[in-house]
Length: 510
Image (tube, rainbow, N blue to C red):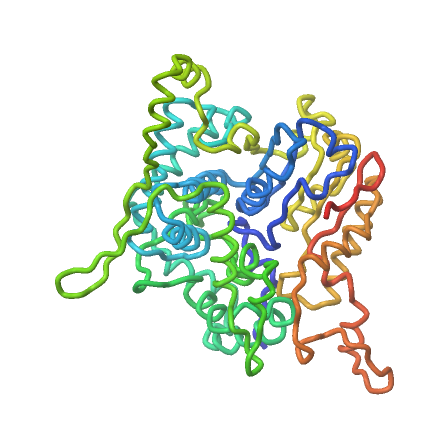
């Protein structure tokens, strides 16, 4: 009988995308914390910038908050460099929204990308490298690297050099090697195993992900592929681990050490407030997760960084239509020009008050953290600092302790990611939630079941009756497995588990 590797082997050692939907951290602050002018948020190993993008998208609604300081801790410096590159893509106003979405999705979840996308990533990496050479602490638009050591900044520069270079990185072979190691003797039945994982696991909690898309990603590591086949390696997904060679001893191995089981669709492609994406015809969804990804990212990109170029469609002599990007410059009226000439203070005001490129850049700052978490928890500079702390399921086992109370401010909300979107059995998902509650209670945290259920309802979508797994069963006819699945409800459907440190329970803003 073939040995079956645990799901943790398929998830990998390094997290390059999230295993839960994006959310706005300001939404889950307590009423007393919302009265503060400056909010400090800590994201522990989020894996990507999904929560940061949601914060930038909703920052205008929090008018009473003057400044939001976001601290992101990652277990790899490659992930930090990758997050800066993804932010550059999201805020690049020289590209159309459609081009940014295509570039972002390929860089986010494709192991192989188009040549044009590879060139864009190389350009962004060079830009960030030059910014770090000019100022080692501040990187546009909102990043602060002063919390990192000089050695760590140098390693980030090495990662950026690797992304912008043509160093050999056989992504296709690395993906295949990971799949072979995970499946072992079952690799020859890859198609059947993927069908089983989708039908028996993923379809229960994310049926909007199309079966063909999930199968393509499991086989080739591609989530989107338009305008031809992807052939260039995505170097932003490369990371290094410590290994031991049989002859040379300890070595550092660069490769692909991230997820090959869950898929990147979860962060942006499963939930949306527009219910039209869940319409069905002939028992099939009319839309799929890629459509939801594009819809969600379009709203975010157009809000935080509107495109300053416009598309002009022109016809060639042969009758073909081509799209040309032109700078969308605003032509000033003669009246405005005359007013400027009449008012001598206009030029002085423009010099004294230079406008920021983005309105939110002055209200949000992102600082990166790296290193031993226990040492970070013990530092005096972070004592009672954070108003909200997010903990990824990847690192929850080492964060759920009383040490976190040292950095949690009064009325601090702790949000822990669950394994709802992982391909494990429903009773195991409930057991994970129960373990989080048990560890949180030992750390003197107060569980907030009302917030747990509100988040579950918020991040749920209408599923057809034939797909529901938690129908009231007749005890006389229910099978043992079905009864276990029903007993695991509703904890198995919690995307997050909420706790409170030192204060009264917060309320979710409407």
